[in-house]
Length: 236
Image (cartoon, rainbow, N blue to C red; front, side, top):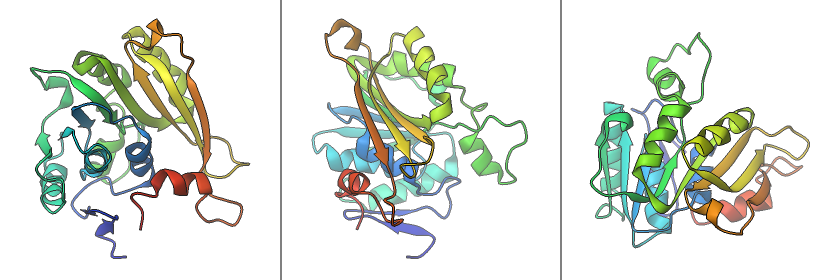
C-alpha cells in the first residue's frame, strides 16, 4: 500500500498533505460513533475520513467536516470528490469555535487534539492538529453543547487517562455519558484510548450507560475479532 493514500472498501483517503494521517483512532471513531439523524458534523475532519465513514454508515445524512488547517481541507475536498458520497459530504476551513450554524446537528463526532506537553513535536502541522492548547477540551465541549440537537449524540475518542476530566467537563455543559468503550491494544495491556458518546437527554431516561471493552489485537498479533467486526464494512 502506498504511503500517500489508504484504500477502504468504498473510498480512498489520500493524506500526504495532511498533518494527521489515517490512523486507528479515526477508524475506531468513524466505525463506532453514533451517526443517527439527518445532519452530522465532524469536528477536526482532517483528511475527511470520519466524515466519509459517517456518510457510508448513514445513507440519509448530510455530513459537514470542519477543520482549521487549509491543506487538510483541500485534500479532504479531493477525497470527498472521488468518493461515492460527494453529493452528501461537504467541508469548510474554519475554527470550530467561531463557526455558527442556523440549525443544530443530530450527531457530532470529534477526534480531538490531546497532546498537552509544553514541548511539541517538530512537525508544526502535526503539533497543531494534536495539541490540546489549540482546542482545549472545555472550549470544544462548550461549542458542541451549542451545536448539538436536544436529542443528538456527541461521540469522541480520547486518551483513557483524560476520561475523568472530559466526562466531568461534558456534564458541566449538560452532556451526559450514555455509552463507553474502553480500548486496549491487547488484553493484558492497560487501556490506551476510550470511545465516549454523550447526549443531552440521556439523564431523563431510565437507561444505564452502555459499557464495552475492546482489544485491538489478538494474542497472535492480528486484528481481534471485535475489531474486525467493528470495521468489517471499511477495511479491505
